[in-house]
Length: 445
Ligand SMILES: [Zn+2]
Image 1 (cartoon, rainbow, N blue to C red):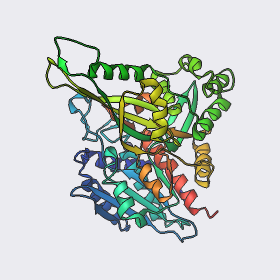
Image 2 (cartoon, rainbow, N blue to C red; image 1 turned 60 degrees about the vertical axis):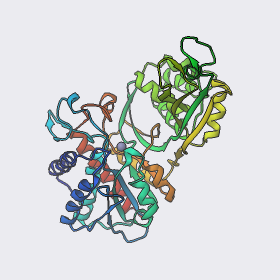
Image 3 (cartoon, rainbow, N blue to C red; image 1 turned 180 degrees about the vertical axis):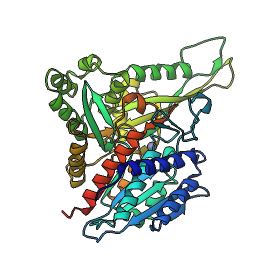
């Protein structure tokens, strides 16, 4: 079937504008309004959606296109909430959905209402053409991802798993183009890191601040934090990351290929890392892809300026590579901070890694080779966390793939000021996603 992509571009852009204009800042969320909006579009097109609230105002929407059941369903998932804004820091208001010079501005334009609009559009196109499907295609727009997903994907997995049970899911987290040493690549997220948040606590002798002594909880905590900042954690190369760098090396050729392979070698890693001619944000991302990390974020100590407190605490946000536990992290942390600092873990979600050698990944690669022949698709480890952590509990293979040409400085507006997406990207993502879903779901392998 031939499509009029100019008309489709305008239509999907309108959906994205409408979604941006519905303020779903979390907290408080109010995702029900966005869910109801999507429901009205689905209903208009003859698709009967379900809107389910996990709490007042915290709406989730699920819609399904039936296949003939020869293959297991594909889930198109996306979160509808966004992070807060500082509106006075924006060049164009964050909830107006203004289009300026080919860019649509607003909170959620890249994280991740653009994917909601694209997935919606794909569902509508499949429905309109009455395409015979071998798999059900399920759409899930959910609440609360930005606060951990307990009232969104986590809630659906717990209370309505049968509504979203699928073999594969397409989610946020990958799909963007990156430029690396002059070569273009696209990512497809096949893994993400886990979390292990903990409190680090030191104790000492209380006393009057006029008589300083070294057994001071604040000084001990500062010492531990300083050591974490200066430490080199051990290098770990997970399968996804190995394939990622080896594919990049293969495309780049020498001399960079040698550098990239050295990056994965524990003996050479530290020497090579600072010499790579890449941006600092890329460098810190690569570090995080290859190490468990610990970031102190919140400090607590003392109540009065002239009293030495007996306890000092730091909250630390640690991120674990797939395959590593909180105990593994502790084994790496102890030699750095010593044995006298108390560590108390609060939460621990393991990382995950899905095999990329699957029919869906193959379809993505094949489709992208048509759309961007010079930019191969690489399996990719996301260093943050997404709703994939909930949905993988149902045995679903989740790939992060929202296709976009996105230079790093545009991606840096995610969670920052002036978030925006080019209209070209809205169309590109929709076209690619449509091809992937329609080819994968009419495929009968
Ligand atoms: Zn997001």
